Image (tube, rainbow, N blue to C red; front, side, top):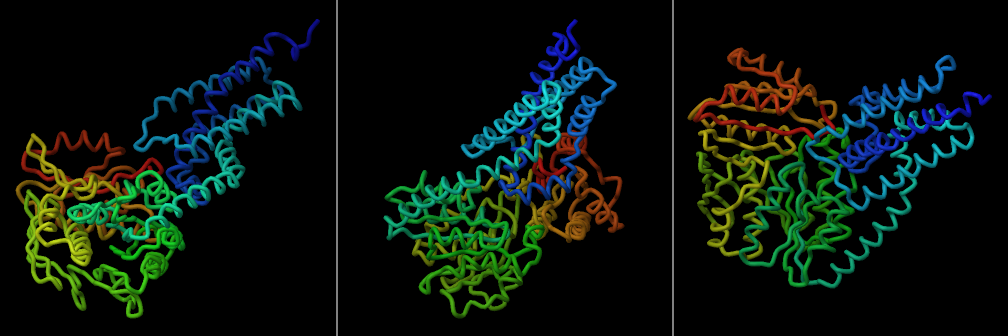
Length: 533
């Protein structure tokens, strides 16, 4: 008489549990990898995010832990516990298949390598468990790995470190060789807590009136992003290469500078962005000025004096420095005056060494005009004719999700500032909203992130500013809901009947459909990624 351990039913139950474990581990690791990618493949950031958001104890992981424990209960026959575990795997696999994300996983070569190693590692662990503890032991370990999938992913990352370093060095050396073969190439670095992407676009548009110009695309502002740009996009006939330089920690910008050796630079801002990793504004300043410190003595630095941590930074012993500002113009070489906004854009007068020049642009907002001051100043130093600069500014395309203005057929004006909001940028966006007086002013926002210990304080201040600039506020999500709402309510002149709470942007859009009327202006301020609730 065969025992239960050798019965056909026992084997079928166990194989069923393992069969449905395969898509479950794939989908779970895929989601983990997506979040790891959004955290820039940095284990410390990913671990901190998982801890802060409770990602390590989600409903799915708790059920996988339950399935693991259920399989271990001696009183429950394996022919019952194994199918229950399989049903749990099926349920959550289907839920992950249906999930929608704002920024889904991009299967880059690196992501494919990580996924391949993670799946192989999981399969090897389960196979070893089968050899040592039999079919039931393999099922127990398999479902424990679903609960511990983040550990599997980070272990795979560690395994791949030597491989990634070797691949990156090969690409880095290749990019360095390409640059070395182009000694006449003009390289301009752009960095700042915010404004660098917009300034990069504006400078590229203006310089392209005279030069063959390349800029790093999208948000390719890391060393590897710059390396990829050089290897894939830089041509022998390129005359000017504009390099956006981002940083999440000290040394990031220096690393890019050591590769490209910029001759000129623009620093757009030193502000309270990424304080979660930088900790202090002084560290932000030192990191952003790694670009300035890398310039040759005959270089040009255009820097924004509207930020105290830039204005206070001595530059006497460095390259030629052009300081620009709109609000705090003391000691500045370049300023803007007579700024006017309307539904078609802005007009302003550039005041600098070249004299006073009146510009018209479809861009709106003090931040965009500030970014234009930097781009115009650099273009003038590179001998772009004023008429060509004026034409470029007048025909400038708005950068997507960075305070651009659209008009809908239904009569609404949309101000899209959904990319990566920050204290200064949000203040400027609200200033633009306050000028739109043709109808009601509506803001939809989840607030600001990555502000470290000042997260609640700065979002509360943001709420106070909303109360003074908007007629209707729709606060999205839970992350900053209380801080913003309390800030709005602190201003007794704001009608709290016009304060709405939405759990998602989909719900916010439904609210907007019922509220908006022709002539109203809607400001979208920030759109949090999937890593924030």
